Image 1: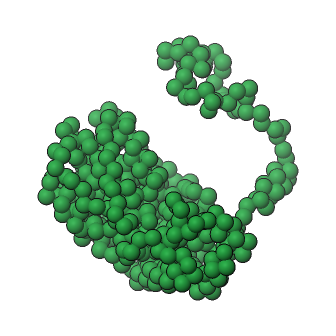
Image 2 (image 1 turned 45 degrees about the vertical axis):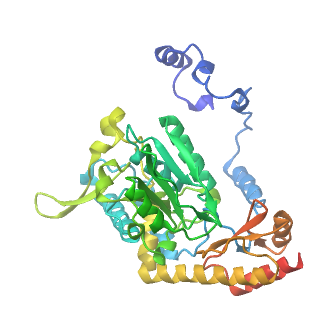
Length: 431
């Protein structure tokens, strides 16, 4: 790759010296040796366009595409109207970058403003940012918003997504904060003890990682009585049937925006949505687009409250988020516009109804639900050999649920048909 780097060896040596390092290895001394590439990247010789096309097609043929999917666990398969891709693939959106110059960025700024408005309508909160990198980042950034010099302890439910918990731990480790997990009983988070004055917030996922609908209002009320803030991680579709984060009493609402028009795409790019109460607005990281009027009284859009951001304050900023997932946020906005409130509610209702049908049928086939509490579109069943069952399902073109601690976490969306569910149940009963 050296031939693609414009700086010369002498220039690199000069930069290293200025930074206080003798060698490149010194620069990367904090990286474990077993993660470092030795002896170069061993790249093959360059290919022509035709040869490259053939190689890529050959690699693509190795992908396994399932006819039906019953796995979620943080990334979900929903129907995406054709208009979504048609709009967001336009060149003016794909190539747009940071809209610092408002006078030439009105289109992008308006699209972000519309996205923020829809997220506020969905969550019931007062203000939304222009999104962050993903749902896990949104959760960790929300925890950072609640930190004060005297409140450096974070409570996190054991029923949140494991990857989200890992990112929260990483953020808290860097800040010197303590993370305490709250135990779960029958799939639900127990009301924790909020008596410790060092506790800043509690992070709860609704529905949780096991699909169970939490008693979020009860936990939120107990938290606020003790002066602790509640962060609620929400599924976008669940918000169409369940109370909104604002109705649950959340101070900050976050979540993964992938279900809002983004295909699974092998894990990204996705976006994390964030919304907060007005009291928390000045601690909200990332971009916020506001609507105003120009000197002729015409509607105009601008980046607002920029003093919160690190490109203005650097070391005094509340976050180092200096970008947003604008194209993904636009995708979410176009998707929400295409679906409309009734379309979103219909899709959510189908998720709920179909998941309950599958859970009932699987129980008849011998796979008993692990938790008795109500659920949205995901649920856990007992299974002595989840890998074996999934292998059998794969032979029929079915991607089974996620194996979890001696069971399976199943997911059903509006995409799953009754015929697909009945076939799954038939195969499960046979195994």
